[in-house]
Length: 94
Image 1 (cartoon, rainbow, N blue to C red):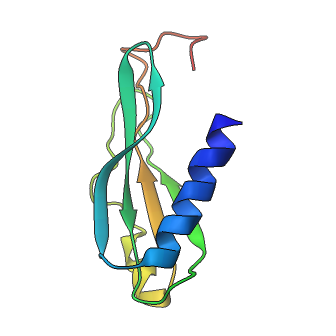
Image 2: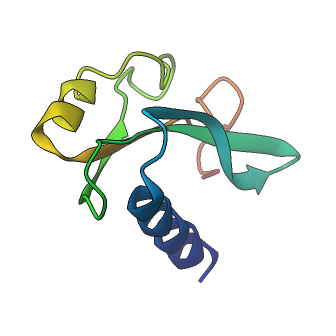
C-alpha cells in the first residue's frame, strides 16, 4: 500500500510541473536508510511517468544522470531511483 501511495504522489507531482528537476525525494526507508529518487518534469502537465532503475549488478550505480532523462523533451516525466546496493543489503534483503 505504501508504494501505491508513493507512485500516486509522483503522478500528482507531474501535474504540478513547475520545475524541471526535483532532486532527492525520499520514497522509502529501510533499516534507517532512506531511498531517494530524482524526478525530471516536462513543461506539459499530466505527463506519463517513466521509472528508471539504474544498472550495476546490484553492486554499484546511481540515480544521477539517467540516460533516459531526454524523454522529458518528449513530454514524459522521468523518476530515476536509487536503492540499497548488495554491499549494504545482503541477499535475501530487499
